[in-house]
Structure formats: C-alpha cells, structure tokens
Length: 72
Image (cartoon, rainbow, N blue to C red; front, side, top):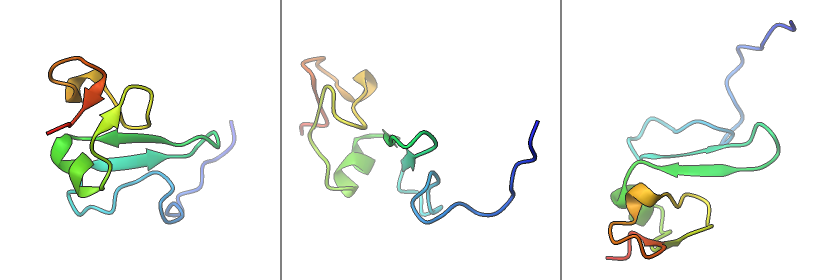
C-alpha cells in the first residue's frame, strides 16, 4: 500500500475553507461533486434553485419533492 501524502490539498480540491459556508467539492476521480449543508449554503454560493441532476442537488433540500431544491 503506497504512503499517502500529508500535504494540504490544492485550493478548491476537496475541503472547505473553515468559514462555515456549508459546501464542499471533491475531485479525486477528476469529477467534481458538490455538497451543500442546507439551502442557506446553496443561496450563499449563488446556486439556488438546484434542479434534480445538478451538482449539489439532494432530496433533503427539496421540501416538496418536485425536483427543485431551495426554490424559496
């Protein structure tokens, strides 16, 4: 098993900055995924509303289960 580097990740490469923003991105496989803690974090990132299939969408953010999260 190869040793893992303990160097800090490159900017925007998978961690939050610790500012409490509630979103993170990961890029281990070349693809990025986005996680928002809540709709406040989605709005702060300027990404509201989120539609089903978009990065960051999850059913927990879609209160009425219509495929659109954080719409209000």
